[in-house]
Length: 185
Image (cartoon, rainbow, N blue to C red; front, top):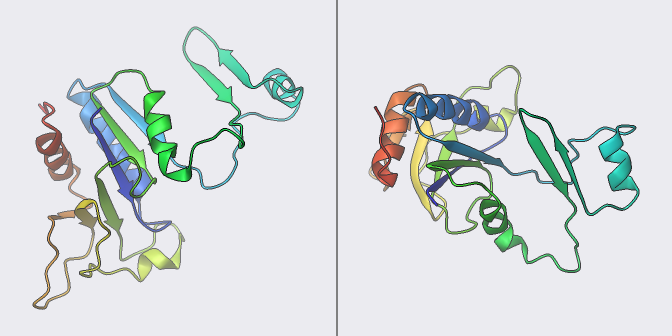
């Protein structure tokens, strides 16, 4: 499976970038899947709805479906769940076949290469962490590029990966397409 992750501080623009890349790859005729990491328990169901009631009653899986889409809610048994490092591998195995998977989060899991997203300005009052970021030589193992709105700091130490402009979605899409040998027309 051809998969690439995007990591960075809250408010750095990962979701917006992934959204724009999905649109670009879909225009090229690719079948794209997306995976979003949630750091805590989450619920896409609402109290009082039938599916919520089924899970509350003890169902280990509840499938909600219509003619247009479906969602399968599954409870992980903590006693039988593999280690945290295997979480992304388990999630990817659940996806239907596709040309490319774009992943938000799961830094360093499953051997999936990733792009670090770094922003110098906040978006709509988001996290100050993003505003303080600069393109420094600090790079997490497994990163294949940095996407940023700020050029690297001048100096003798350079990043060993390409630095791409966060606003140039076409260049980022080309970089990913070349890396994973997927067509981009």
